[in-house]
Image (cartoon, rainbow, N blue to C red; front, side, top):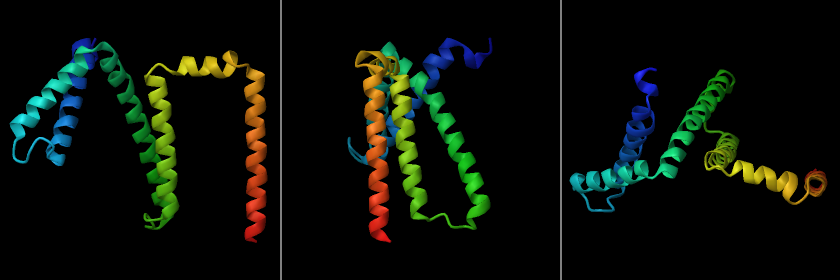
Length: 158
């Protein structure tokens, strides 16, 4: 067992430091507790970080969520590298911002559902709770409506 995989580091010190630094940075930037009072910001940040680590559900959520953040950022980095090869310096494209916003939002929602432990409940709801056949019919109906709308709206533009 390496020092970084020990429970004290992985589930204690690193999540504490992450929450402490994030809360401290937010308090410093927003001046909620007053300007020029880093000691008060540090004390409040310490208290919030300590509470986040003491409560097992919050700590487990943070420990589960952060590796997925690294995965998401790695995927974005690869996309940006590939886009940079073909973009010829056009980084201000409006579509790029929209695509990144939508994909980032979907990724965050998916990771929060997974890390929060809601995935099993959601899967059970869609597969067995309400009836898998009913949901597949609803999804098929929505896809058909969306296709008809796309065809209709594109026909009106041309």
